[in-house]
Length: 387
Image 1 (tube, one colour):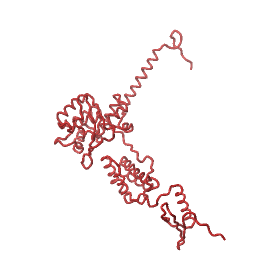
Image 2 (cartoon, one colour):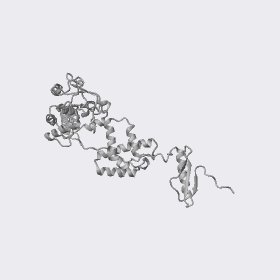
Image 3 (cartoon, rainbow, N blue to C red):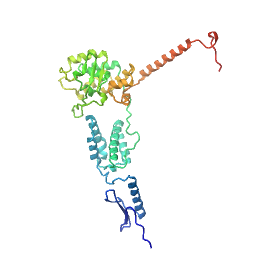
Image 4 (tube, helix red, strand yellow):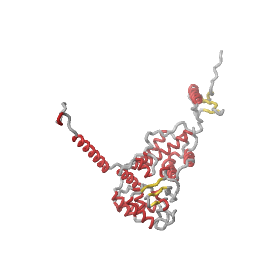
């Protein structure tokens, strides 16, 4: 009588309890055992068949690979990237406040789609939607790298649209409001308001402007670097937000008097001196300027959520109304993508009336031109077409 055929792959055996276990040799020759026991021999053999199929297709993953602590991996992930100081600070803050409190005790392979969905729902109930979207994108990026490193089979962050931010339309200031804000913020800082609106320059770009960057004759300012202020108070002097941020901005002629006065009265006198310094000669600080900005905003009657950064919306919108193309506004604002530029372009009710008015004039002119042409028919008599 022929004996039972030997298994081609792996081995199964039965415990005294009656349950079954299975084992196999992995790609390195190490023996791997099933993480659980089985009710029947058939169940154990089916499991082995699945492992064999994964090995054959090249889909097999080391079952211990995902046993890496998420907190350790995520912090290492941030450290390994060449991030700007502000982005590094943002990522570490998102991890500390919104991600690690939930996932720091888990291994990578323990973070599952249900746990991600539960975490996101909890965060959405506790904080703003924009912050949750940022935190979700960061978690997804970390786990995507873990999948690329073959530590997990698949990224568990699979919620469609969860990383998309849908911020409300930002309000823009009128020309009169910009002037009022410039007056209210005080003579030392009024030029900063104008450069924010009509530059339109980011506050961190203005913080690193130098006297040598200003050309009064051509009314231009060269943006070379940026100095964002971190939450620790440190000025992180370095590159602009993108390569497009390095640019020469042509200012409108009406700013000539303000620019010359600022150079004479407030900028450091050395050629390499800072354009904006405080009353005691210290570099621009976001915290001290913020207090002046909030007082000015209240004085003018602007909404509390109107940020200094929103002056860029005003600049984009007014530039578009003056005939600037999308590319023009991108160059002026130092933006590297159309998507970024479009965020700052604002089409309010007044602009829509201007568009409608332009259409009205165009159609009326075309109709008038058509009515001036001779009608069909002999002798100029109008011919009425039948219905």
